[in-house]
Amino acid sequence: MDRLVTAESIRAPRVLAALIVGALLGAGGAYMYSRHSRTGVSSNWIQLSTDGSGFGWKLEALFNADIALPEVSKPQGQAKFLNRSEGGSQNIQLGYVVKASVQHLDLSEVPAKYLQPRKQGNFEIEPIKEVVYDAHIDFILKDADGFVLMKATSEPLYIYSGQENVFQGTANEQIPAGVAKRTKTIVLELTADKCETCN
Image 1 (cartoon, rainbow, N blue to C red):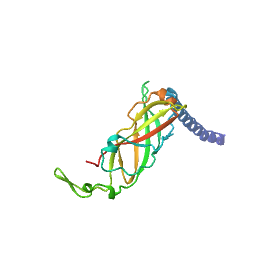
Image 2: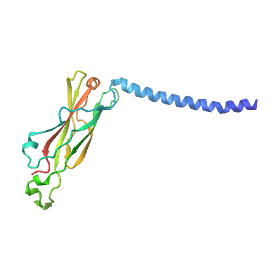
Image 3: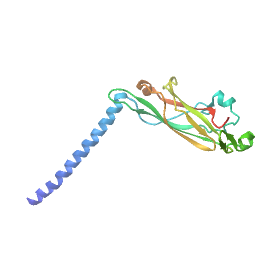
Image 4: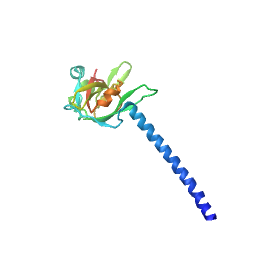
């Protein structure tokens, strides 16, 4: 009799603990499912694609700069829909991570004025070793048939020569849930807007 009571007293807490853990896991799963089902938007990462090189120039960067940005590798990255919904409102943002490598600046092709110290007001600017450009990324959201649903744009970015540039953030525009649900591919376009180093 004592042996039976001891076995039951050991088994009961284990069963209770298993029930509690199961209930917690079930509640967590139900919450995640209900959160996804409210909008129907997947939060999985989407591999970004490019049309051509994935890199382009604004006219100002192309014609009003006397230091050319060295060759830029094809940008690559991923994006995902971030569900920021609360209290029935649907607030979906596009989060992204994009990488693009830029070759080192060829100083033999840089105007001589940048290769010696320069005065700017009360300050002396050291000779440059690399170049910096203002830039941005456009994300073109397309449906299963390749039709454009909308375009979203990153915050202003900087492209540095001589390194791998890693951009991470969220696009400026809010994404309607209907657009996010229908999006099958996202095309990225990295654009150099203006030479920050040039003057």
